[in-house]
Every structure is written in C-alpha cells, then in structure tokens.
Length: 573
Image (cartoon, rainbow, N blue to C red; front, side, top):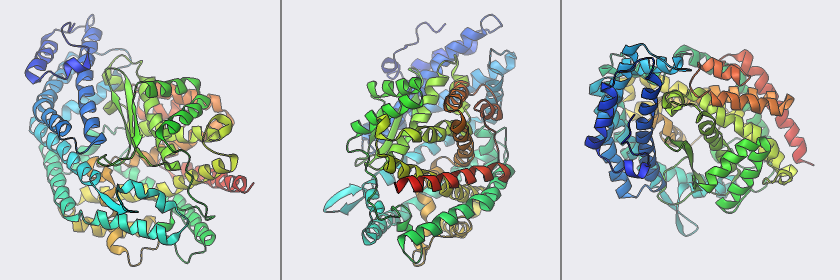
C-alpha cells in the first residue's frame, strides 16, 4: 500500500513532481498477481484521484476568475511541470497492467479503454497536449474578458441575455448587435489562436501515426460503438425529420410575432409579447427551489443536491472576469461534483442548473465503483454522460410549479416546458451544423487552418440546417458565429454527443410518461454502472436504445410536437 501518500488534497497539492514520482515508481516496481491486483488498482486509483482533483481545482480557479493571475500561474505550472511526467508515469502503469493480463471485477471494458489509450500514447505528444490545454485557457480569457456598456454600466455579455427576451423588438436588436459587435472585435486574436490549435492537433495526429486528426480524435475519445459514418447518417436523419419540424416552429413564431421574417434577435422572445420568465432573483432562491424539484424526481437525487449546497459546490451567478458557459466537474478524491454556470435570473438558468445537476448525479451514483478507471470522467462515454444531464431536464419538468416548491404557476410552467421542448427541436439541426462543420474541418485540415475558409464553410452549412432564419445584411456576423462555440476550439468533436444523448434522453422521458418511478430507477441504475459496460448496454440499462436513424427520431419528434401543442393549450388557461 502507498501508506505515506497524503489523503488530504490540500497537503498533496503542495507536492512537486520529484515528491510525487516515487509513488508512481513504487507502483511500477511492485509485482502484481491475482492475490494483490485489487490492492494495486486501489493504490493507483488513490494516486490518480489526487492528481485529478488537483487539476480540477486549478481549472475551476481559472474559470471562476479569469483575472486571477496566481491561479493561472499555478495551473500553468501544473501543466508544465506535473502533467508531462504524470502522463508518462500513467502510461507505464497502464502498460504494466496490460502486460500482466490481469483484470478485476467489472473491469473488462475499462481494460479495453486502457489498452486503446496505451496504444495511442506517444512521448512526443506530451508537450503538445499540454500546449493544447494552455490554448484553451487563452480562449476562455478572450471571452471571459468581454464587456459592453449597457444602461450606463460596463457589464459582461451574459448580462445582456435578458434583453434578448424583451418584447421590445428594437431593444432586442440593439442588445444583439452590441453583443456581436464586441465579439467581432476579437477576430484577429481568434484567428491567431485557431491556427495554433490546428497546427498542434495536426502534429499530435501525425505523431500518433494517423493521417488525419479526426481518426486520432475518434480513438482519443474512445468511440468504439459508432463511426464517423454513423454521425453523417444521423445528420441526414435530422435533416429529414428535425429540420422540417424546426421550420414549422419557426413559421409559427413568425406568424405569432407578426413579423415578415425571423431575424436572429427574434428567436428567444416570447411569441405572445410577454416578458421573459424571471424565476428567481438570487442564486440562493435558485438553489432552494431546485432542491424541492429534485426531491420530487427522486428523494436520493434530492439528497445529492442538498449535499452540493452544503459543501459549497455551486458557483452559479454571472459576474465580470468569469469564464463563459457552464460545466460540472468532479473532485475525484472526495467523490464530489462541482457546478459552474453564469446565471442572470432567466429560465435558461434553471435549465442549465438542472442539466448540470444531472451530471453531478452521475458522479454520485458512480462513486460506489472502487476504481477510478471504472468511473473517471474519461472512462464514462460522453454519449451517455449527456443522457444523465439531458434526461434530468425532462424528468424535472413536471415539478417546476409552486405546487412542488418550484418556480412557476401552472401556466408559466407550461410556457417554460413548451420553450424547452421547442429548444429540443431547434437543437438537433444546430448540433448537426456544428458536427458537420467539424468533420469538414478535420477532413480538410490544411484548408481549415485558415479561419476565413472556416467562416465560408460555416456560412454554407448554416443554410442547410437552419433555413428559416433571415440573416440578410448580417452575413459577416453569421459566418463567424462558430467561433463563439467553445467546443469547436476547446474540445473538437465533442458535440455529436449532445444530439445522440438528446435522443436517448427523450426516450427516457417517453418511458417516464408511462412509469415515472420505473424510468427514474432505470436511469439511476445506468448511471451507477459508470464506464463498466459498453455504450449500447448503458442505453439498454436505462430502458432506451442507442440510435442514429430516422425511424427512432421520427416518433420522438412527433411526441415533442404533440406535447408542445398540449403546453400551448395549458398556457392559455
């Protein structure tokens, strides 16, 4: 056993690599056999968990305050001085385990993933992967620093989101143009950054023996259960089923708003000229009402969320110098999730918190698995991790009303649910746009290295998947919108997961309409498996099927459209 290894994260975080390396050396030198393999895996888990949590906490520190130079320096030191030798040491342990031909209970799938990671490893890529991580910090800093003057005050761009929901069309347009104009000012910096990302990724792929980055990334993401061709088939199914449904919703919106065409500042406003839903004033209210909702979905899930509040694992409000977006990460030693988001008092914040809470429930449920290699973030397929979050949005929806301790009247809740379901329909075409675009980028790496070529391709694909939006006179803005989609810069190809998972989540929702308790029980059972079974089996355990075809998508889209009509009737009561 690694008896002298600190269990206290705060103590471990003070160690430099020369102090950490002996623990890896001991594990690498220790003979392993059928009698001690479980202890060896447990010791490896303990050491790797400490390093994982250290990195997670440093990453959190750089996103909660992008101007914290000390946090940035510590994170970069970790990336420079600890990450490279750690990756090499981890590779040695993977290879030792693989060479032993030993395994443990529920370890066959993790072993397959470890084998793939070991085969992908190249010493020459260690500094390049570190450089890629540093580039993501630069991207976050660019967008985390953006402010505009609004109502006499310099505010982060997220603070203008409520204006995009305002019934005053002129106000919406002014806010929209102000946001986009400020983002357009960052074009030179983003062009330089994009070239750096592309050059690093090309070299990583070449070093690993791949002809293109997409092939490398597929292996890196451990995608064993579907292919790029399946993704393209899914895009076609979405174009056949979801794009027409989105167009029907868009035409309905145009008619209700009484406007000639759908401009980009018309996509979020309520179609009955009502102000946006403002479900809470302070983040404390958001937390308390969410607690009640989760208790109604499932008491154990509610208890998990209560723990997060009690342990200060929620950072929810938008503020200056905070990185954009939202995420849930894990502190691996304590088996605790942490939720980060940029709330401004709108319903989208409620949805974001419920979504990220779904990820946090995954952390809690999988924590019972003994080894990090069974439950670590990189070992759980993201195509199912997103089912955890997206299904929670749908499972929580019936409990949004004050009757259950939630946010809304019955009519307001119906409106919120309708808007959420409309977003489901709208999302599939947008997801396909993003994913198709990424396939093109890495199939045409040298051309796509030029950000202007990417701008042109994005504009071309935009009309395929989002035909109802009117961007006349705004073409220069439309062609650069992809640059604001952080996944394209920071986590390439991590977007199809949302579309696939949304179809899985909608199937869970459909099951819950017949048997709520049974659907939630199956959902929790699937979460508890972590990454110990193949992706199709995770879906099957949750009571649904992994699918990329129109035959599965069609009835789900029809169900969503019927429910939207039901919610419209409930709104009018």
